[in-house]
Image 1 (cartoon, rainbow, N blue to C red):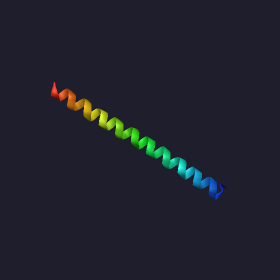
Image 2 (cartoon, one colour):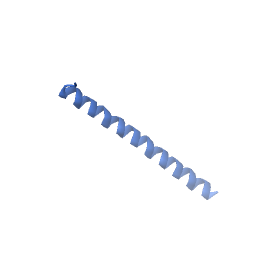
Image 3 (tube, rainbow, N blue to C red):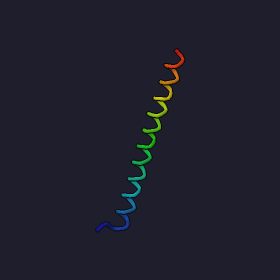
Image 4 (tube, helix red, strand yellow):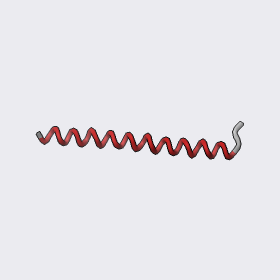
Length: 42
């Protein structure tokens, strides 16, 4: 069993990881959007 401190640390780590993954996802969505706009302009 985990102590309350370990649970809090794990939850904090998961939240940080989720934010990083979400940020990466947003970056790729923006990248594909930008590439699409550039290619349509040509």
